Amino acid sequence: MSSDEDLTPKTETQLIAAIYERAQARKRERVAGAPEVGIFWVVDGKAVILGEPLGEAESWGEFKNYSQGHDREWSRFLQRNGIVPRDSEYDDYPRGRVVYNTITGSFNLIADKCILKDKSMAQKVLAELHLPSQTTTESDPHYKCQKCGG
Image: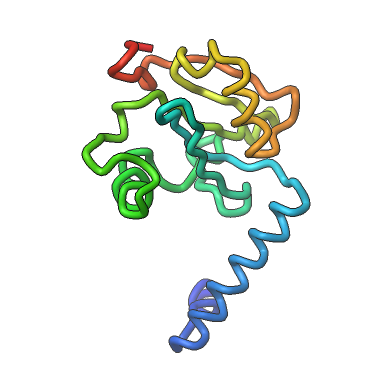
């Protein structure tokens, strides 16, 4: 039996307890101001930011990354909960992500040029995800909104 199997909840009660403990651990990290990786959009002038602590982030080579993609979170969570327009697509709005480089120990905010040009919006993302002032920023052709061509 592997160590992963030993930690797998066996009953519904154990599963609920595990989910609760994970939520409490995340809450403690957020209260402590621990830096997070995440994905974000600017929708009608407002930042929509989803983050998670490094301990929950997915490993992608040398990077720690938010565990879900923009497309999935847009339809699964944001549209379903009325946070964004139901008749919209995830790439209709400026977007970006924050990753953590495990080799350099640094965070990188990668976003549509529209977001990077708006210093106050970029600062909002940095603050919400508790990122250090040394966080680098860059644009990427992948993050081009349809409205401005970012």
